[in-house]
Amino acid sequence: MPKVTVAIPCYNHGAYLPETLASIEAQTLCDYEIIIVNDGSTDAETLSFLNTLNSSKIKVLTTKNRGVSAARNSAIAVASSDYILPLDADDKIAPSYLEKAVAILDEQPDVAIVYCDQIAFGEREGLFSLPDYDRRRLLIENLMPVSAVFRKIIWEEAGGFSESMVCGWEDWDFWISVSRFDLGIVKLKEPLFYYRVRADSRDNAMRYPRKLTMFCLMMWHHKRLYLQNFNYVIRMLFIYCFKKNYEF
Image (cartoon, rainbow, N blue to C red):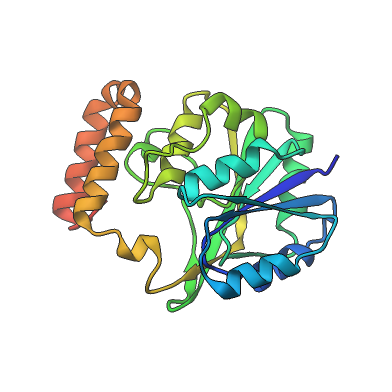
């Protein structure tokens, strides 16, 4: 059984997928499997590339277009590993990421998630040093990239990625689901995840009305946590929205 499963949703991103797969193949930890979910792609280049894949480490599942949450859930559901790394089809990881994350999960059974700083590339470049994990702060700010390594059992216990978060922030919603278990979360203090910035990415296309809708939906999903921390949430939203002109 492989040590870690890299779960890749792919919708018409065949142009980027070779670079993503190359970053996985360059890992210092070789004990992995890759599950790609072709989420109803219609792009000829994507379909052609997926048809050429022939490796014992790679499985390709083809589904109807149901969105990134459903695609991730489909991949993780059939994963044979205890550890999972979600990775979008246009992103990359540094060669030592899996080895360092898996070592922590192996050595510290109380730790459920390992994440790291990230480097943006593509249409915008730069180092993003992410904050250390804070359970309350997570309610008003996404502290972790989706490409963290976590135990499959917490995905099962949290109910997977919410397929109702159709406009984005499904990873943030998932981390909040996991936070209620009060498990250990470790940040590797180095940039080991490469996030591709594209003009047509979901994040860039997510304008204020959609952000507000997704944030309200997230509060509904986790209303008990938000009510328990009501004063903190209101105070921090006031600071971000009014003093810093911050749009969630």
